Every structure is written in structure tokens, then in C-alpha cells.
Length: 271
Ligand code: 13P
Ligand code: ZN
Image (cartoon, rainbow, N blue to C red):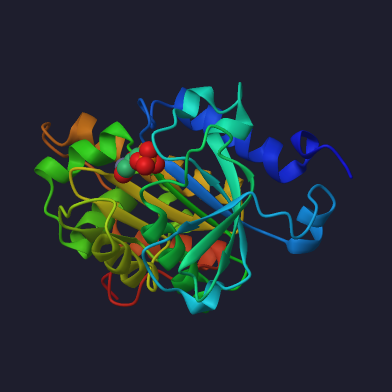
């Protein structure tokens, strides 16, 4: 059995959590990450079926039965993940129609998965349907996106168009745009279902006055999505109060579409 602390999925998760903290996106225990693992890969590092304990999930997700996830722990600080991965992270396998999570590794202080587990798992189900390559769901609290939700219209098309106009590459990185949920109580199945619904049409979902969710193929791609949206929000927060002299026009956005082979969300650009 290989040492799990050297597993690429674990080292990459540690690096990502550390980097997210360094970006200021994850104060205290803010933010959470889940990543779908390949069972054959996990078997190189863990005995099967050595179940440490089982934890009820509080929801049903039959599509995830038998699926294994590496996930951050509730109440755990991203800044500490690198120093004690076994305490701050866990590997769980979903069972019994997704109503139970079998802990295979981690949560070593008796802890459990993030309180946002419903939003993560339901989003995985939604994204898998759209693109089976999606393996990562990431949530964090980037300051500029959050700030924007206090002063910008929360209409998804308007919010997305503003972000697209702030940096040339935004439309290339997230042509599907950004969906937006109004403020809702976090950590519930309700916000989980609502987030998953929004994940059917975009890989970024803003939670007004709270933060953002991103979904992608791997940790790098998902991090990059959030990073790009947050950069755009930062620019908007710098210029929104100043007289606007220039912007990226819809005609220029269409040039970007052809140059980079992407298609903007239907109807969100002028023809
Ligand atoms: P957890 O510590 O339970 O992951 O919660 C952090 C958070 O960001 C809630 O939205
Ligand atoms: Zn949060």
C-alpha cells in the first residue's frame, strides 16, 4: 500500500486549499472543496472496504452511490490543511442511495464533511449529467464578487455581461456565464438543490452576499474559473464609480468567440 500523503489527488488538494487561502478567499473556515476520485486510484493507497465510520448525509443522491470523494471538513481552516491533511480533509464513499457517507480516511479528530455537502453533492450530480468529466466543486468567499452582489443588479445576464466586459478573456474562460442565487440560508438541502439547478446551465454560481461556487474538470480548472471571475469583479469594483469611457463591445465579444472557438450563452450577446 502506498502512502496516501503522497497521492497526487491529496497533494493537489492541499496545494489548492493553501493557494485559495493565500488569495484571501477562505477566511477562518470559509469555503469548501469536493473532488470525485477514481476508485482504482484510491485503492493504491487505502484498504477496501475499511470503513472508519458512517455519517448520515441528510439527503438522497442515488446517482452518487459508490462514488468516492475527497472533501474538506466542516469548521476546518484552509490555512491549516497543509499542516494536518488527515484532520482537515476526509475521503468518503456514498452509500444507501447517497443517504450515508462511509468515511474511508481522514476527519481524524472525529469531524465530518463540510456543512455545504448537500450543495456539493447535488452539484456533482448536475454537472456529471452535463459533462461526465466534471470532478470538482469548489466554494469560497472572494471579496470582490461578494462586494459586487451588494451593488450590482443580480439579474444573471446583467451580472455576467458586466464581468465579461471587465477583462478580454472572461468570455473565453466562462462563455456559459455566471448564474446567481439570491441570499439563502447556507448549509441546507434547499440551497443545495437551488445551486445544483443553477449548475445545469453554468459552471459558476454566485451566492449573493455569501460567495461563489465553481465546478470543473480538475482543481486547476475550477480554481482558474473562480480566479478569472474574481479578477473581473475586482476591476468592476475599481471602475464602477467612475465615468465609463470605454468597454468591450458585443461585436468584439463575437470576434473573441470566433478566435477562441467558444459560444457565449445563447441570447446574452447582441447578435
Ligand atoms: P464549512 O466549514 O462547514 O465547510 O462551512 C464553510 C462555508 O463556507 C459555509 O458556506
Ligand atoms: Zn461559504
